[in-house]
Length: 444
Figure 1 (tube, helix red, strand yellow):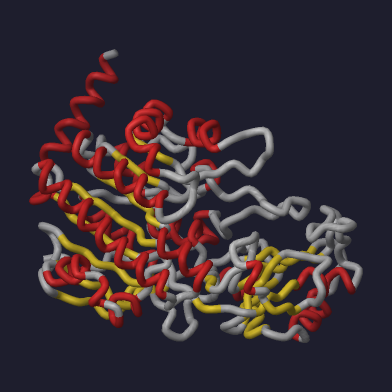
Figure 2: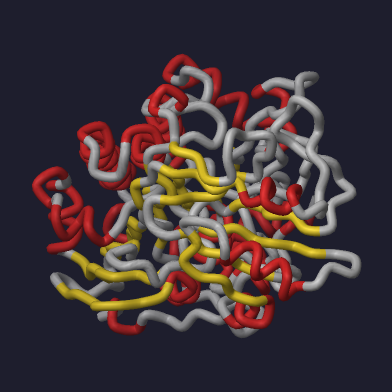
């Protein structure tokens, strides 16, 4: 009881004396969005004018949502923090498990650092936070087993009483996990929490635009409409801090995690591996058996290739190189240097316009995307997951608040630099050195 009382007082004191930080991740927002579509985002424009715009932020290998958000919040590359993909290698499952849980993260996330310093934390659909110790947590997770449902998996993964309270107040806004309604729900929950709980560190993940780009294309009217909606949601979040009396002591960061590229061709690399006897498909299904010797595990614009047994990597590389749409093949040593999965034999990148699936039993190794199939599993008009070196593929970030320079720009930074910069804003330090460095030029 005494310890709980002490921790409670410590958190209360921290909330009264420390500057706060609100990080809003707009999934798939790129540099081009702010550079070319500024008329759609008047509130972002105001934020840039009263803050610092870090214009071109280079992502990680691969530029996927879960690895990217974990790199943002740990300051480390996937090879170190362990979230090397969105989903796990489960060949027999059409819908594999995602890296939902905090226990899979091998580096210290900033929300744990903040909590250890006595700060209050909140997160709203921030990836890979299920089962974490965040004070107010709505974890991003969905049911992919027939014996469970959204309510049960969310309750187990999130802060249960907090989730119950938010669902009771705002659940009517949702239509399952469909967009843009899910972002409406998340925004309402974040607004309520910023007003009533006043956390020191708040992490918000909004996915509307990413969803629209996957379904309709990167520069589609639907994606532009989503960008405008996100501008309105961010304005609502900022206004809430004014209403709560915390605005003058709150720093805001509005950032993207990756950009997207339009696609119209799929590469089913596992079909080539099956032709060489390295894996076996399941009859009548697009999945395959666990007894593989060579397998591709998609990252959309890139794919990992894993080998085991006595397979000759040189032969595997020759097979991959002969497939249409392949842009580059990194070997395992190169993948490690890039910060990707150290267990892979190869990291393979597709040409723009192409992306990878894990499927077998398809009409051809390379197959056009049927427009009628868009919205089904692994059927897209836009994807990410490419290497961050693709042309015009930067993401971006806006910093604003009492500690941030006014009307300034920083030309370039790396995604892993964001976490250390957040830590400095909060007066915190990661327990181990990070790959990223503080973006010093954003500070006054």
